[in-house]
Length: 90
Image 1 (cartoon, rainbow, N blue to C red):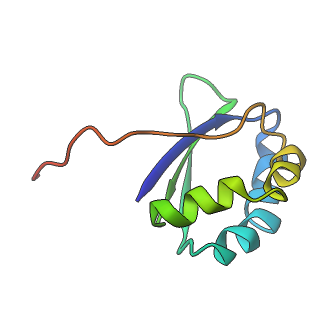
Image 2: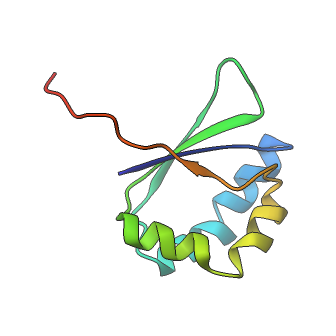
């Protein structure tokens, strides 16, 4: 699992691209799915949980075509991957 965050100019524009063109590109790099969350304190911030291995995510981010997909989606900056801080029972 990978958790990433970014800010978007327009949520609807983001979802339109994220769920189509970006999804096709993510699948090329082994993504098995994702869940999108909106930050309750900042409507322009989104969090995405990916079912994805780190290596595939890193290759996706490095793909030169991805920056134009991010631009089309209205990302205000590239996504930032959250670093795991621990894993606990219950």
